[in-house]
Length: 138
Image 1 (cartoon, rainbow, N blue to C red):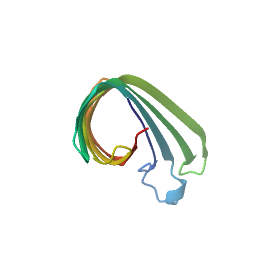
Image 2 (tube, rainbow, N blue to C red):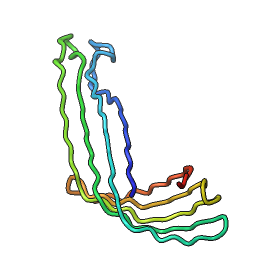
Image 3 (tube, one colour):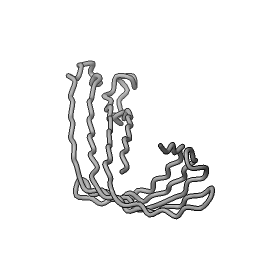
């Protein structure tokens, strides 16, 4: 099983050209993105004394939620009422990859490159993903 969450936010200043208003009164978009992946599948492992190499094909779903709001003033100093827009989508996701664990039976260091393929908003995306972390086995 592989579960992941990715979060991001940004502010986008609208490109209005005017001389009657300083730049801080132009409208600005704030965009927040939340992505969650839920993937499951078999993993094939080759074990040696201090190294465990593995390969996997994981399938599942990815959910994306994008929200945005705009605030500010127009160049003639009228306030813009807050406008909030949000959308979300769940689609099919696949991760193909593998990696290796370096260490003992209880604790190891993991290096894992994957290709994550998602199908959202009528588009297919191919995104490389590299994970590095500590593995603790019970």
